[in-house]
Length: 317
Image (cartoon, rainbow, N blue to C red; front, top):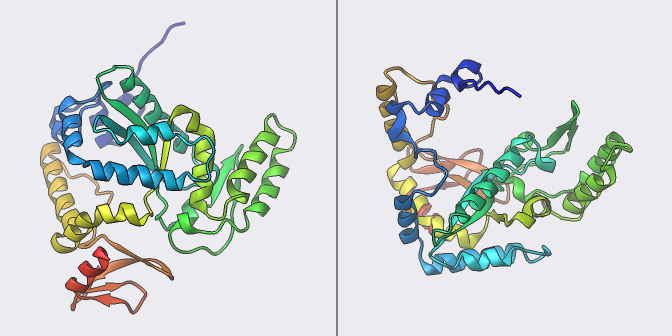
């Protein structure tokens, strides 16, 4: 069989910027780490120094608690995370119903493959594949459906707030529609059981998605983590405080875009436009954006407001 390889640029399937990255345009070398089939020793050393033994212990304790109702939990992976010689290969994605788009699976498969390849190098380090659940995302319409053979199956209900906290109420009705669609196709019963055990048997979407991803990939050493946890957020407090005080995301992105435009000698279409503060407030009414006001900060669509001192106190609490 003859194989003809085509450069990505000839397919016209990628934006110009992405094509230049794939083609290793030297003008862009300073904006991302080079693609490699083995770890960057300098980067690994930086990561080793960055995390304390206490932070690793906190991570292990959080994972153990989150997996308390999961059989065959990857406890050996949790234990390995206590070592300063253990590093994670991480991907993140929304909690799409029954995995949603195919790249939900591709992304997880990629981190598992990379971890396996790097572990095979036996360089004295251990690499653990991790799926970070975007449980605090609030866009329900992006995750409430999945498509099979051209047919889209929806979970229709009024939902607000962080999706990981959403009740799975109503997904038993989605299962009935799913059963009708599957009919007597191969593996129909297995797929129905997986859906039922994931979504009908769990009370919220985070627990359901964790169970589903574990059933699909747990045997390959995948660790699944939910960041919507007080212990983990406590570790993030210094970064939230700096965002409040220094507007890091907006200023940093503006600087990067300017440098990128200069390197490309052309203006790129900016895909993301950070605000002067990129924080959200999560309360009983859901998740709302925090914005700057003339007197301090306010929570959009609420009467909640803070001075800078009050907001920093709230972040630390």
